[in-house]
Image (cartoon, rainbow, N blue to C red; front, side, top):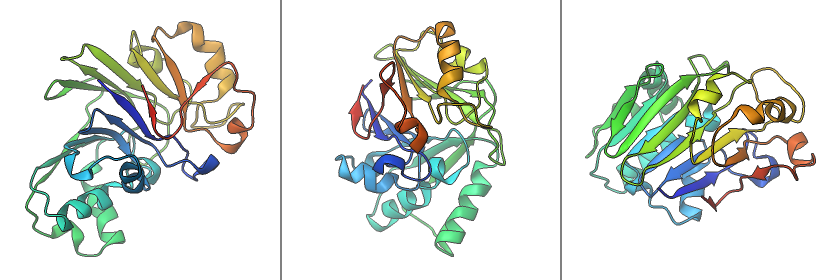
Length: 238
C-alpha cells in the first residue's frame, strides 16, 4: 500500500503546506481538506480516480475539499461512484457545505452517485481490500472526531492516522502494530483539543507502530527543535 502525504499542513497553510489529505495508492483518501483538489493535481493524481474518501472529523481543513472533488467530477463527466465514510452527520454537513459554497449543487443529478457511510465507533468498514476502523478521540468539531486505522488485506500493510485530538489512549489502540502512524504534532506545549510534542514524547514508548511521522504542525511546532521526530511534508511517499 503506497501512502502519499498529499497535504501535511494545519488549517491555515502554515509553512506553505496544503491542508490535510493522505492518499492510499491512487484511489483512496484519508481526509480531504479545502486545498486538496489543488494538491492532488500538483502531485499528479487524477481526482476522478478517487473512489473512497475517509474523513476523520468535520472541520473544513479535513473535509472542506469534498464539494470541489464532487463538482470537479460532475464537470469532467465522471461516471464512477464516490463513497464518503465519515462521522455521524457527514451527509447533512456535506450537503450544507455544498449549498453554502455553490447554491443548488447538492441536489444536481450527476452521472455518478455519492454514497455517504457514517462511522460507528470501533466498527470496521470494508471497502475492497481495505478495512477502515474509527476510534473516537478528543476534538470539538460539532460531531464526534476519530483517529483512523486502515488495514490492507492485499499488501498486509496498515496505516494509522490520529486526526486532530488531545492525547487519548485511543491512539495507542488505533496505531497498535501499524506500519505507519501519521500523528498530529500541532504545538510544542499542551493546548486544548490538539496533540502537543511534549505529551506525545512522554507517551511515545507506549506506541507500538513501526514508524511515527508527525503532521499538521502549527508555526510554533515548525519553529521548534524537531530533530527527534520524522516530519511529514507535502508529497512525502511512505
